[in-house]
Image (cartoon, rainbow, N blue to C red; front, side, top):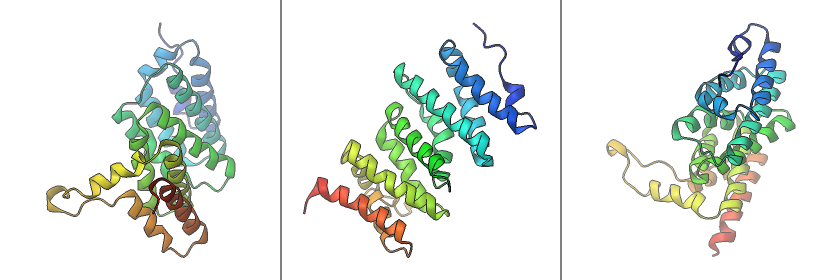
Length: 212
């Protein structure tokens, strides 16, 4: 079966309302044309990254809703994200997680959680950890909060993987990457109360697992 019409003309139309129609077209196609949608998943993620980065609120809401349904359909089909696909979509979901609107911020957090159902949680957490270095303070808060939630859901493996990497020699003789716990501890020294509180709350989750 061929997906006709493929909504390419809508996706790259100059009118943003057509972008909303494109996202709706993908959602409508999913139940009966799942395989066809999956065959262009990388292109769909690339397009979604563009639309999320543009930050048009109407389009953003539609695209995030579309991504939630795509990930839900993948979970139902026991379909896993490839490393390549994860690298296409997770960085922008993390970087834009500090949105000013609570609903959109919650949608980003939900997509991070959904991603961990179709991609190893430890690997999702590595992307979220990178968000601690964002220039957007609200993104850093959201990522600090989400790391605590991920540790609470998935346990010690979430942060112990980064500890192992941080203890290994760095590439090309350079310093090893910062561990997740070190990244969270670094946020505690920041001036912003929300950021400090989020980091401390996540470290408290770690303490609950590790004890004294």
